[in-house]
Length: 86
Image 1 (cartoon, rainbow, N blue to C red):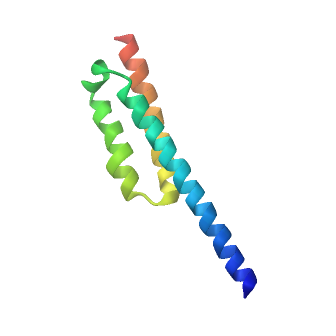
Image 2: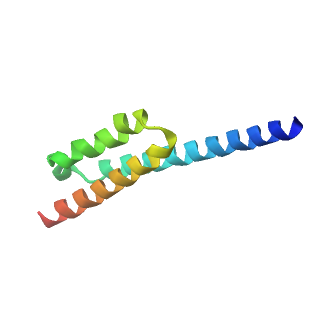
């Protein structure tokens, strides 16, 4: 069964690297959301983006977290465009 152990360690390393990558992406999006400024904070979408990046992200499985970050990225882009138009 040595081959079985090797696969398990590879899978664990792969899981950890994906987990760390998602956490880094989440940190980047939180920084981007914070950088939008005071004008974006008054927008209702700002609260939803923060919820996506915090509680929704934490409740989701690893596979779902990538989709949650994609949705948050889209919403932050919409907020950025909306605040520059105002």
